[in-house]
Amino acid sequence: ASAAGLEFDSTTTRGVIVYEGAPSWTSRTPLMPVLPAFNDTPTAHKFSTSLTALVGGPHWEPVPLKVDHKMFVTIGMALDVCPSNTTCQGPPVGAKLSASMNNVSFVPPSSLSLLQAFFFNVRGVITKLKFNSTVEMVMQNTVIIGAENHPMHLHGFDFHVLAQGFGNFNPATDTLKYNLFNPQIRHTIGVPVGGWAVIRFVANNPGVWFMHCHFDGHLPIGLATAFVVENGPTPETTLPPPPVDLPQC
Picture 1 (cartoon, rainbow, N blue to C red):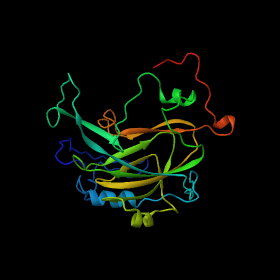
Picture 2: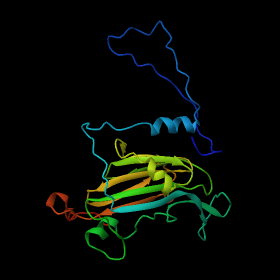
Picture 3: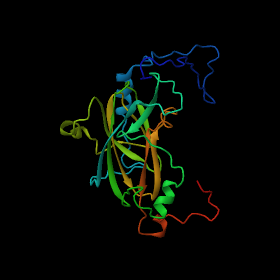
Picture 4: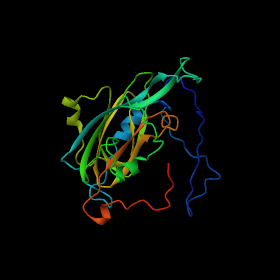
């Protein structure tokens, strides 16, 4: 709970799991730990950032060290002008909430899907990532109308979380904090309140892949983007043609 001033259901409950064959708890009251406050950001951040991957584990992938694309992307909430002949609840009156990545709000296509544009090589619509290229992305959380944690989710890939922190990302010092040995492997990362997170992944899955904030209220107002990955050199890494009965936009 990071957004200040917003009401939410703060009720909690607890349960006891009793394994088969374990002593019965029906006659005893279990000891309950002292839990941190629901808005104890430092404790939550310390816990989540201390997690590491199991090097050599069944799903472990080493961090790619050669980076082909370095991206610095701001994410956050702001305000936009209320469209003409419509009513916006604000705040303030006459404005509407708007979310963006690098000051661009994602608008779903209305006539031609991104995957169709990719497949039919429509020019001037999208730019693409080369197959098997490595992407490093610094996501900087902005504080335009309030600080809030944004859980950013990437479809189609897992990524390494190299580092996280608060405040503005400083490439001169924060790159020294990168964990290139055993970082977490995730597909969703909560970009800290008013802070930043750095991820790295290999674009080895051809197609169009959505990246967006996982807050339901932030997605429809534009906190999203899409990665377009070109085909690879083999049939297994090449997108098949669309089926003849594919519904049109």
